[in-house]
Amino acid sequence: MKTYLVGGAVRDELLGVPVGDRDYVVVGATPEEMAERGFRPVGKDFPVFLHPQTGEEYALARTERKTARGYKGFQVRAAPDVTLEQDLARRDLTINAMARAEDGSLVDPFGGAADLAAGVLRHVSPAFTEDPVRILRVARFAARYHTFSVAPETLDLMRAMVASGEADALVPERVWQEIAKGLGEDHPVRMFTVLADCGALERVLPEWRALDARRALAALECAAARHLPLAARYAVLFAGAPPEVVASAAERLRAPNECRDLARLVAAHAATIERGRSLDAEALATLFEATDALRRPARFAELLEAVDCVAIADGIADHYVSAERVVHALKAATGVDAGAIARAHPADIAAAVRSARIAAVEAALRGFAPPSR
Image 1 (cartoon, rainbow, N blue to C red):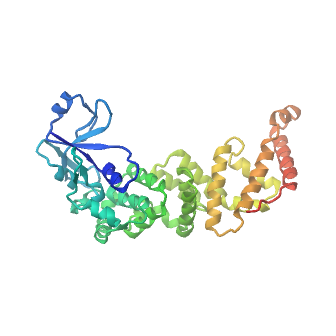
Image 2 (image 1 turned 180 degrees about the vertical axis):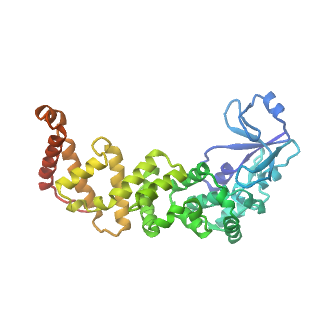
Image 3 (image 1 turned 30 degrees about the vertical axis):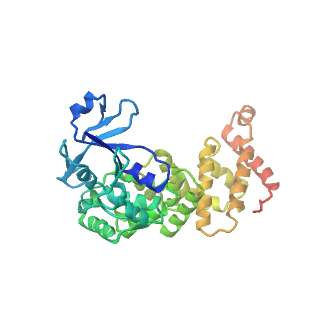
């Protein structure tokens, strides 16, 4: 029985970046032997165990054989005679198919260290084509390692997978999982360009055809540079998109509610907020009502951040003036004592509160001085 550190931990160690989760492969053991040593089984599709002290994952070495289309169409074999190299051979990229032995030596049967040094994302074997999720993973790793190139032969395999319909077997949960991770990287635009290069983008997100790709990617680049959260990065893609496109994409990807809702707000209100420097008090009050800004100020602030990135993508030079003016107006509207007005005007509370807010915004705008940057 031998244990090896594998995958991302080895890759990150060689890159000199902080190592996150540590995963291990155990060669020459049975599930019964693992249980006898105190490991707790957690794997459903193949034998994975948690270390009794550290809680880290230890998987028995295994092979996989393709039996049907899609990422679940595999027959898994985990047995004591499965070698480490056989286990590494089933992995996606050479940079993820390295192992560190207990004595500290590097096991690198597919040249992962060389590809890491050269900055190349390269598939391990032709078995790469058996799992459509690997298309998304390559694109996601391209977003993480934005200076790395995708090996031409790997890109060819990805294109072949799209052409054969293998990419159509992707399920929404896995698509969103990889897309969300890619959006969270420092250079998420690269994920979309790689997916477009291999023809997969419009397969996993047909709504892309209805978006302004240049604008969407420029806004996303801004959102990433500002380290905006996931919902904002997702939402900027949909500025100006029709409501049905936003709804269809969110449903297809099964995006979280906060991503779906912010995308809907950006799509519907980006153009209005971009004109914030010229909106009168009544138009601003209407904007606050439509976006629920007074009850959801944090979400509205995120909306403004997202729209500011859209404005930059649109080439608006003094984009920040509109945002500052909208924020100034919102503070005035928030300061209105709705309770006192309701007591004073019980016959028509909504109209009275709205009038008071418009008056407060008008007064605030008279004293607004555009910021200089």
